[in-house]
Image 1 (cartoon, helix red, strand yellow):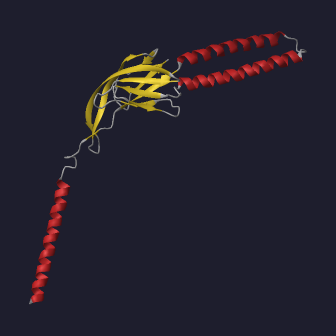
Image 2 (cartoon, rainbow, N blue to C red; image 1 turned 90 degrees about the horizontal axis):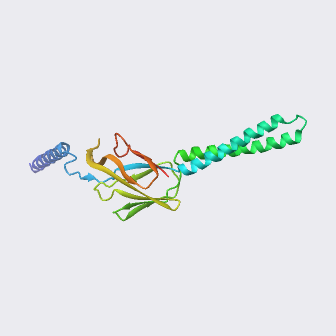
Image 3 (cartoon, rainbow, N blue to C red; image 1 turned 90 degrees about the vertical axis):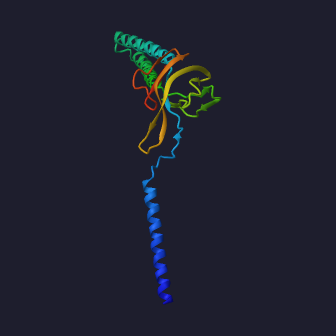
Length: 215
């Protein structure tokens, strides 16, 4: 009789435990996974591109001069007697060197037009912080303040510092994982010490906006 009571109690206890476990699983599965989620404070970002238009213009001028010199050499060679082999060879050698120099100028211009350069530092005015960089790049991903702590930047390139002031509106967005993100829209440059810029005109949201500055 004792063994029968023990077996009955064991079975009842086991059923009770299984029932409790099922209730717990049901409760977990029915919970909204984002009830206690906080906003993820990843800062929205914007891309800066910097074009050294002064150096590009200088290279274009030098390339034009070289091209004119090459045309002059071609005219001179055409006017020489074919028997003047030494003069013709000498002029062709000069022309070849000018062609090589122009190829370097052209390659350098393409690199500069792509924006490839090294930014020394970007300082966030009002936030007492900054970013420093070791390598060159064609575009620079810069954070925007998710709480409006800063909208002004000081950018230092080759020891020269310029200023940029932005305006933008922050808003919240829920991603596919139901995280609440802080984002920015209507991003625009309202003031800068750079010579000129290509500002954003439409769809100016963080992660998709590129601002190009010329100096």
